Image 1 (tube, rainbow, N blue to C red):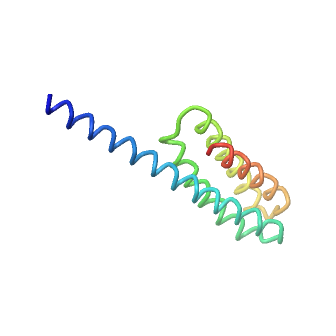
Image 2 (spheres, rainbow, N blue to C red; image 1 turned 90 degrees about the vertical axis):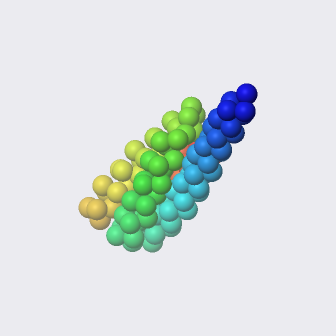
Image 3 (cartoon, one colour; image 1 turned 135 degrees about the vertical axis):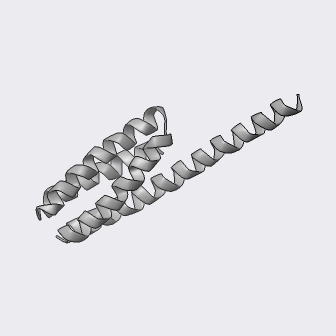
Length: 111
């Protein structure tokens, strides 16, 4: 009985840690995606590129532990961020900004 209680407590701790990590990753992804949008609106494609890359890393990390609707939205955000990165690399700030805005909406919906 004591082993079961310890095992259960360990499992709960692991799960709660995964949820906290996911929330931190999602918050970081949202922060960087918002920064990408702001710089994109100013025509700063290289800065948008950097923030979109960081947002993508965090969105993917959050997606690894997310489930259901949250995972679907983080996956969609990751796709939009990749589009933003691709266009920012080409200097297409306007198109990259629209993709980053889509990512922001998906990240918000994942919460």
